[in-house]
Image 1 (tube, rainbow, N blue to C red):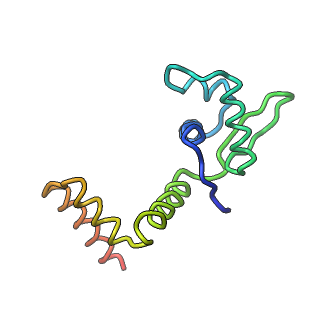
Image 2: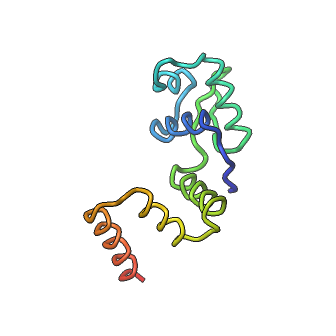
Length: 124
């Protein structure tokens, strides 16, 4: 399934759906921070997510219970690929270099990154 780009509001709704697994619009709204958007706003966002094929639903009369069609991991993977393509010439070394230089990582953080890299190398 092709993952589509989501707006910030759509991502917020998806984060709630990933957390709840399935929910009615009122349940999604209850999890949103103050100031809460209008019920109709959340309903519209969910219908857009449905059109983008990232949300499905079960109908109970006129009421719909929504659930994610993509996992949070799939969406993260898609967003990272987009980020790398748009800003780092599809280069993982460019991405890592940017974060290492820009975030002034301390020795402990660098050690953690090296440990992850070494674990990955050993697994291959």
